Amino acid sequence: DTAVSQTPKYLVTQMGNDKSIKCEQNLGHDTMYWYKQDSKKFLKIMFSYNNKELIINETVPNRFSPKSPDKAHLNLHINSLELGDSAVYFCASSRLAGEQYFGPGTRLTVT
Amino acid sequence: EDQVTQSPEALRLQEGESSSLNCSYTVSGLRGLFWYRQDPGKGPEFLFTLYSAGEEKEKERLKATITKKESFLHITAPKPEDSATYLCAVQAGGGADGLTFGKGTHLIIQP
Image (cartoon, rainbow over all chains, first blue to last red; front, side, top):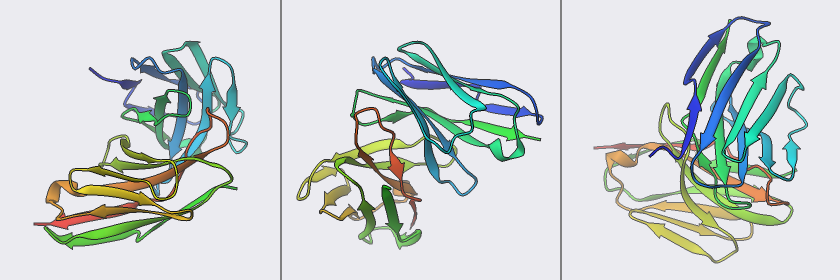
C-alpha cells in the first residue's frame, strides 16, 4: 500500500496558468508538508500544516497556497505559474514532530 | 537560522570499502536530526532519527551517530545497492516545523 501518494507525477504547463498538485496519506498522520527540490537537488520546506496551524516559509510566493480538505489530504495550488517554479515538489507527512515520510514527487515543468 | 552542511558532496567507493559521511549542523533547539536516502526519480526514504548527543542507530550496513555539532553516517562494507544520495536534515522549534536539509552526499559504490 502506498503511504504517501501524489498526482500527477509529471505536469507540463505554460507560464501564467494555474495548476494543482494533490497529495494523500494513509498513515493516519496529523501533519503534512510540501517541499520543493530545485535543479540542484536542494530540498526546501514550503509549508507545514496540521489541523491547528499552517506554517508558511516566508520565501514562498503567495501564488502558492496549500488547501487541506481533511487530515489525509494536502493539495498545493499554484497561480500564475512562472518559469522559476519548475522543480520537483514533494509532499510528506508525519505524526507531530515525528519522522516525515515522503511521496514520490511531482515534476513540474513550466514552459 | 538553522543550517546543515554535508560533506563530501560526492563519494565513490569500491564495494566493501567502508567510509563515513559527515553532517554538520547549527540549530536553535534541536528537536531531531534525520537521515534519508534518495534514489534518482524518487522521494527521500527515511533511515534514522537521532535526538541527542551520544545516540546511535543502526540498520544493516548503516550506522548513524551524533554529537552536539555533527552527525555521521557510517557505511560498513557497502554494496552497489547502497548507491544513492544521502540527505541529512534537522528539525527545530515547534512540532509542525518542516525539516532543514543539507545538499546531500552522492554515494557511488563500484562493484
